[in-house]
Length: 572
Image (cartoon, rainbow, N blue to C red):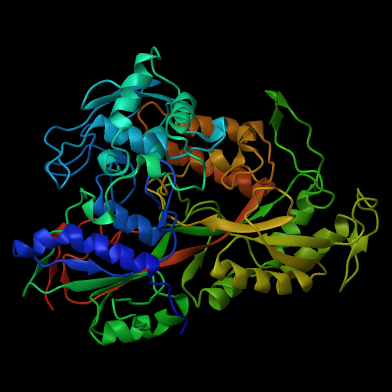
């Protein structure tokens, strides 16, 4: 059993106990979260924490108030319910290019301080300090008053508010002088100041350097943060109960490690979220637990680089288009289809995921409202794969070489470099794909990076389902020309260009009523087009796996095991 670093989990434990002690003293039991997983790390700029994985975000959303409420089943932005700790009570269905918001009255941090527009500005401005303009959510922000603020959206469409949605941090805990800075800054800027101007001025005022401690803006200790979440869990005896997340290890002050199965059966915990795939079989066989297992929003895909990886370049330079050299092998859709037919997706699921996933027929998981059940899935057909490779001019059996292919001088053997991002499951999947492609004569070399430099042939990557807008099915980031930007991990990494696809994505984002059904109809067209042209191919969705004992009202949705946590009653 691997050991776990206790630095961040124990830091979280300190924070949680400070936040929850008052509730326990009032007679409420608390569901105590001891283990967090990767991704909860200190930052040097506006936000203290940068959550990048599911378990971190789940906990941050419990401790901190959200900007917008969303439907737990669909993720669609909605009006806040009475008493819900959501800042914007009734957001518009489709925001204006310049949209003003008002924070609900009487929302307080736990120290009694009102939650203000300065908290929102502090959190929003620092979210994407280094993002290129094409990837930013908003163009500008203005603080209009204590409870009002205005944002100018780069694209005021059905996805804008979902993309902006985040938890909000208390500015006084991290930057006591931010309010005075904001007042002075806005006095010098008319209208709605741009996000770039905000960030530049903040860096200059406080001498913030990326990666360096921001001592000038920090104050107090972690114990002094006035958390905004509510953790009112009912129990039958007032005892504390434990959630463990993602890694399947329970960690406490005494540094003990316990496998997921042993923890649940030994009654150490009441709820286990997404344990390792290898441990799920034993948990499925337990007869006295509440088990939820279904496809979630985390899905893995194989991206084909359609440009020459030896000469990676962005789509635009100085506002003008930059010519892309075609990939010497993958430019040919017959080769891309052959690769897809040579991959046995079920073998990937059975091997790396221990059966804990479902093969995909397109870009969306069955959990998504954009999923099209009528779409034909890719078959495993290595014979047809070999025929397509022969037709494309790549001949041979164990090792294929160019005999009539288009670019023999640039790559004469059918060998591809498969890049894998930092994910243990995908690393196992890559090894299986390497074997499967080898059976049809495609040599594969595996190496590890995030794809942002666009110097790969194939990229195995995916979505984690971690963000608040993970359920938004818009694919603009992944497949539009403006998102073909070097150095970012969330853009059009394969340099795919298709005006028809971009038009469909624009239509789906701009439906006047933002109707799910109207948008889903368009996204189904998008999936068919992507399956035909194959700039990428989606392999499987990972199953969410939540196992509980003694929790009344436990009724999770995909990606949302804790959505109604304040209604739970723990009975053991």
